[in-house]
Length: 215
Image 1 (tube, rainbow, N blue to C red):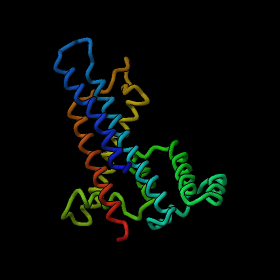
Image 2 (cartoon, rainbow, N blue to C red):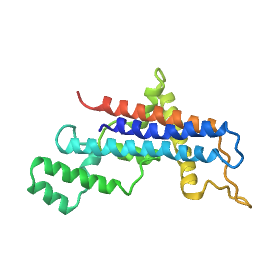
Image 3 (cartoon, rainbow, N blue to C red):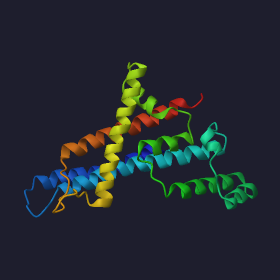
Image 4 (cartoon, rainbow, N blue to C red):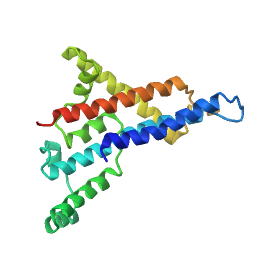
């Protein structure tokens, strides 16, 4: 399954959270706290981005290994286990490719590709694209080079803030450093901005990475 399709599948599951929040918000039941669905939605959107990058890089690295895509400098520095090397050397082509893919995925399983630097490092393993500059250019057609650099910095800053809030929700209960510990406020409009940003970002990444491949 192509990475963008996997992203869309997870995205549709997150849409259920948005629909459920809208429904509960209009019920007026004091015992229910619909804002908790917004927090779950926020985490799910970042998760969809993370999955997309994992799949994009894993699949493209396998394509490099099989000669379908050109090797990048970062790919040349990527290390696999001795066991994988033996399986690749002794097995048929299909088994060798599967062994390499498994090793890549096992290494990526303990990594997250959410922060801008982590995403860019991952993309370098499978593409020569200047990721954030090309994303900025794609999203701001007609911009001058200095403007593109500024837009790229802005995109990275926005993503970092989104991921930092995601981490507060997922790992810190989204609590403020106050006494008593109260949750940070969250509104439906905040999550809508996150959805739009991540959806546009993934579409741009998919576009610019493909465009950087040789004809």
